[in-house]
Length: 384
Ligand code: PMP
Image 1 (tube, rainbow, N blue to C red):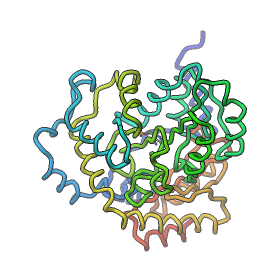
Image 2: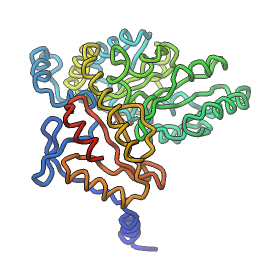
Image 3: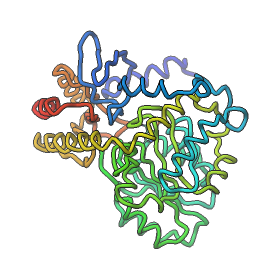
Image 4: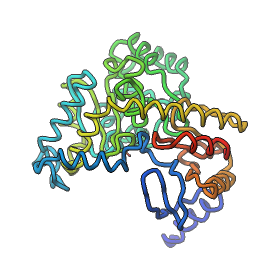
């Protein structure tokens, strides 16, 4: 038997050698700025896409509307016991109305959402067809389910259709799983095309994670599905509150029947303490204003186009058509050097390495926010 510490430290050494060791670092935040070791940098690594998280005027306005009823830092219970505060139902009703659906359910995080819904709805008679690049939380959800899973090549819908045609008669249920804006490549899935595809195979369901699309796309900020006019045809329209919406938690918009089913069967919903009412009230406040932030969405889209062009201009392949812009370097140690160079120049971008992205595709992940000015975008493009 090897001493357990030796076993783990060998793994850490190997990670370190490959440039893939991670450590937790400390930083101070001030709006779009981040301070590290006394240096101020533009934060291009957060998911505060609309620049709302540090908007103090907005926070003050919220505090004025906050009722004593919701001013609670803990729900002190799961929702099925005593944690189902009124504000939860109000938020879910608001979501269902905004998205034009009969039901919606709120979760503690996107990780809870993806690791909870799939195991609840997919049994041994189910086939899951998932895009090769879906987020780790979706992969974990698939692993926890009893379903068979096939991953199709990233955005290869020809392969997806061939898999559907071949397997359609063999399963009781088939669920297609995708993100709308992919978290590492920033490319956008044609959800309307996926809807057309699933309609040709009656009964096939579509699960879409809009973690990076909610807030930033669509005329009311409801995401890529709104932009592409197919919200009503997505069986599980999921998203998170911790990114553009500057809060915490996640949601699924679905049928009322599915909502009840999840309340009864979804373990990451049933067996966890409900979010604090204060956070839920803040999410509700942000969601009620979401439609009014087209100016922020437009600024973000313009900045994204310019940064994508700069990355391509630097000779790098850039799959992005969104505010998430990867600068793919390839090798991990080289990527770390490039990130350090950008940080010296005042841009806080981080290296993203395996296992988060496939081997040989280490990259800087530039995550834009509506809070950056035109001049800052100019200067970023020059430095890239
Ligand atoms: N889905 C996707 C696509 C994500 O990128 C993330 C987190 N980055 C999550 C889900 C998890 O969301 P949360 O941080 O709320 O757990």
